Amino acid sequence: MIRRYVAEGIGTFALVFCGTGAIVVDTWTGGALGVTGIALVFGLVVTAMIYAFGDVSGAHINPAVTLAFFLAGRSQGRRVVPYVLSQLAGAFAASLALRALFPDDATLGATLPAVDNTRAFALEVLLTFLLVLVILQVAHGSKETGTMAGIAVGATVGLEALFAGPVTGASMNPARSLAPALVSGSLDGLWIYLTAPLVGAVTAAWLWRSLRPGGHGLRSAAGERLP
Image 1 (spheres, rainbow, N blue to C red):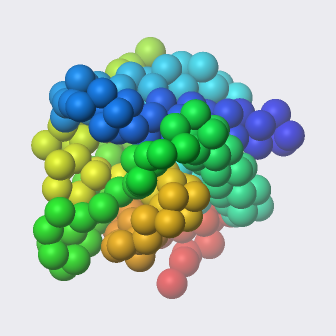
Image 2: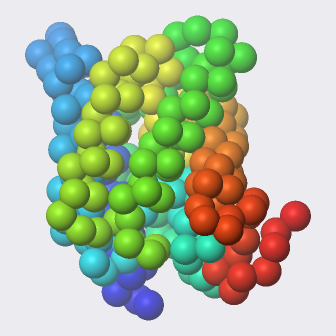
């Protein structure tokens, strides 16, 4: 189990370090990467981490994904808290590293809504819903692994970041938003990025279970019906 937790920590570190680091570099260079470059970085790092750690921990690297796997009956409940703590540790380590490298950056790539909170919340719910639905479809058991999983999930992350990044930051990941927000002190709209991905993940897990043959609603990995 320790191997799983370490893999989740490293995977989330890479996601936050490279993804939010791309935002920091884009700001520092006056827009050298642009929206397309930043979206590409997020998609590629997710793809790389799935291929690197998918067979170890499942490469969830996202508390919303870990919750969805549990609610869909694809992962055991005892793994949820350790996975989330590992993901948060990796995310905070990445943001602290970026703070050390770029001490003058104001936000460290924090997700800040460019629209009103209602629209930002709804968009983050929908983005996470689509991402988690793709993950549940291509994953094997509780793991994002296999020939096409990395490409499918990475492409979804990149696609959503490409069109929604300028509006909400396209977080879809509470750990990715929490770490840079707290380290930089950029707390505007943080509640959106802590709650909306969870709502989207729960909805996706429920729909995925409902569409399976004989499926009806949410279940835990042990098989009991969840309220």
